Length: 179
Image (cartoon, rainbow, N blue to C red; front, side, top):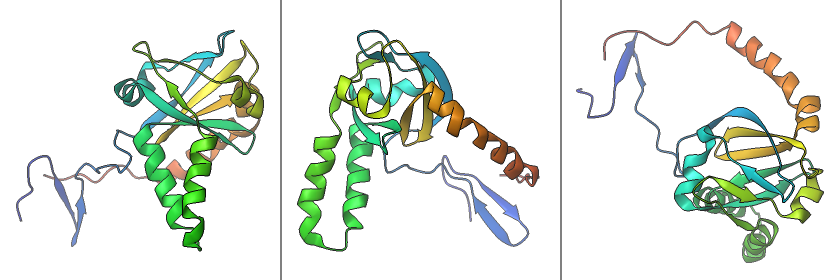
């Protein structure tokens, strides 16, 4: 049939590939890109322009420490969606309320000002080894921003970009045709 407004379809043999924009349950465009910056002496970080709009729009974010290695920064909506999803996977529904409150206890809300600055609380910096005035890497990872001590990013994550090249070696380009 006819493609609706804002939607395009591409014929590939007998298969129809739907190229309509995906609505994200977390409420904003996918976050992407990797940026190096420095933590200010007072623990303040500035989000790079490519990562800031969902956070300046809500003026807040939740910071969640992960495995003692990095922090996740999520918008309030993305945080709620993630907690709901984790809660739904719990085998015993009796733990649901406790699970939810545990997440909120572990992930303080931080204010994000109009210049897209926010303060990383000292206990969270300590939890993942981010020193005052040290270099950090901010990585857009779809629904969240990952905040890494730069030395750990360089040691663990940077090498994974080689795998990305290998994945792309088999890519023949996007399907072409008339919309």
